Each structure stands twice: as structure tokens, then as C-alpha cells.
Length: 95
Image (cartoon, rainbow, N blue to C red; front, top):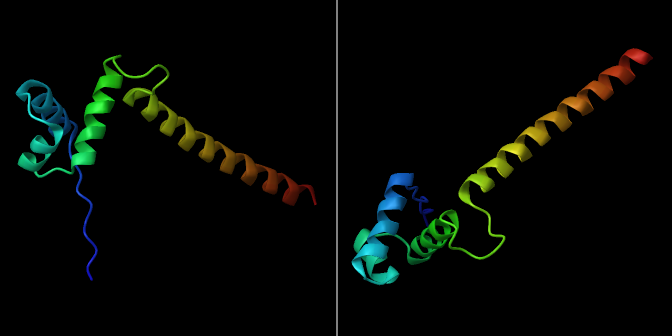
């Protein structure tokens, strides 16, 4: 069995699909089938668009907040690795 490749969509494609759901009056399922997009994917895009516009549940993270968190986690990991390396180097040269 071959593994199915996961499709990726641009921000513009996602925004267009969300706009179509909102303006057409069609259900998410109908729009998803018409655009050959997974229904759950489209449902998540619509929900995230609502959050980004301030219409989501209280405390939900916007797309920009999620991106900032990912960036900070990467930076934290890099700095931790640098610190650990410097600790090992200091211990080596202290001998």
C-alpha cells in the first residue's frame, strides 16, 4: 500500500474557501466537496478565521499567537542547546 501524500494549501486558498462558505450560504460539507477539500479541514479553517476576527471562544489563540509560540519554542530549544554545550565546554576546559 502506498502512503497518501498530505496536501497543503496556501493562506489564500484557505481564505478563499472560508469566504465561499460565508458568502454562498452553502454548508461546509457542500463547499468542501466542491473544492475537493477535507470537510474537517475546512471546518477548522472557518473556526480559526472566526477566532482571528475576535468571534471565537474566550481565550482561544489566534493564528499570530500560535506562530509566535512556535517561534519562541524553537528559540528556547536553540538557547537550551547552546547553554548545554557551553556547560560541557566549561567542564572540559576546567579539567
